Length: 251
Image (cartoon, rainbow, N blue to C red; front, side, top):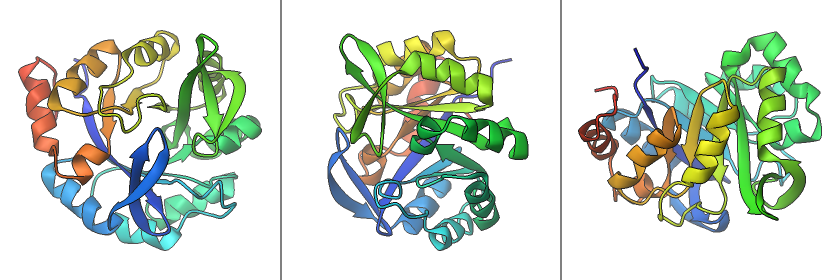
């Protein structure tokens, strides 16, 4: 039996506040992360993803006390990313209350980090986050919150990362991010074809009708931010719409 599709609110955090922009730019305040986390938990979110969007850029660690305060309010899996550079960083995040840890720029800079984390904690702890954009007719990965392009093909990076021990993929479309024009279905489909681990689709959700196509394109979970933060949609709205489309969700 297929597992239910997960609905995951994403909290992009900068300086202790939730922020949201378009195409990773023009970040605006969207609220308190602890309050929003509690609201989404009460609405029926299956997991939460908490990304410190400036941690790598500012060369600092994720705010551990904020992770702890969030974890104290919710009793669903919490993935935390941003500024993770070592297996010891992962240990601290897990100790602060995270269930899984997202890894992006540091893994691209030093791919052996994936092996080290997977060997120490298990693949189930490691979520590889990919900030992907179109460039020269192909998908490439970027670093530092989408600010820096790399020559690395997204599909090649997915294959290598899974071989090294990544247990899940969080696929962020920079092209679709914040546009509310729908998920990048071509990207999701391309990643699905080469991935043997669960795929979380991120970037572009604007209405309840956007989520089912992402699942049909190959997503095991769907992630959104601004539509939830601004109250345009609730977790229940999204789950009902997917259920109406024959997609299994958790009640």
